[in-house]
Length: 367
Ligand SMILES: *Cc1c(COP(=O)(O)O)cnc(C)c1O
Image (cartoon, rainbow, N blue to C red; front, side, top):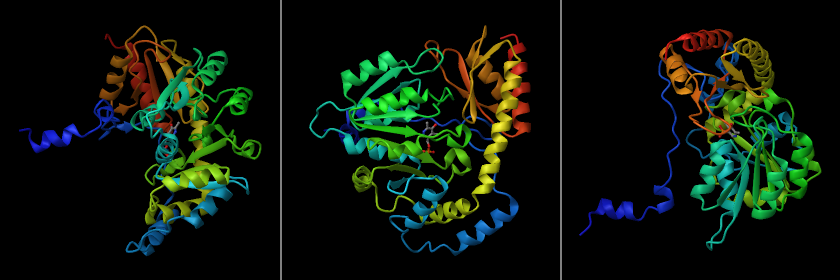
């Protein structure tokens, strides 16, 4: 007789057993430049006022299931066109999941989700566990879109959804706007522009929502300084959003998130100033990195920088930087477009300096 534990494990889908869990590095006691977080908190006055609001929140009650007030504030601040609808997610990760669940096959037939590699890992991961075929189109060596390959892949796979991260993670660039428009115009299904890094790119497809019914624009408050809240939004045609909203669990945006997000959105100047600071520090950091001939730095429209280690092993450099107290991200690629690449988030000037010193020292070391 098999044990009850074995029985339990037996009923887990093989597809799930084959998944790799999403790994988050332990950053205890390290300068954290690995996850594209904003290094700044709210200023003292705002923090104190937020504390009062949170203290008044009715934790004994379920949250407003539609978060109507919060959606209104987001519509204003993010300039969502009047006639488009908004659905909220517990982070944009949850919105990606809701989109996938909305198109996943229930009869074993093939449904495809198309995106670009190297790209945001959640698209493939969520496609995998919802039983959707992931069609990844390789980018060019400079991380621009390979349009002939993209046209081919769209024809071949007829994707239900195309995800375009704008700017892309981990390469940090915005793709060519005309090429994206061509994709939207030729796509047989939905096209989602994932604008997680919008405060740093300041270029958006939000105004194009008016032109295309199959276009959806996704934003998040994570990278602009509220990663702890877990709040993302998907904007698009009301008839599409209505369907996606059916998959949303009723109380996915909790009371504290609704209160805190409304408060911060009422004081959006503060986050706008922080984003401007980060953009300035990005160019400072980029200049310092470009001055080093032992690395190749890629341009950035986001709050992070991708770079390639030349004539040294990126894993060794990553470890050396970590030993010196700074955590960045190792792309762990021995080949391909990310070969020997590392990714660093733009931090405060002091954090960036600590990173630069550690990087210089790592590049000079014997190993
Ligand atoms: C970080 C990131 C997200 C995730 O955002 P959350 O709202 O924190 O879930 C989505 N898309 C891209 C491209 C990202 O880099």
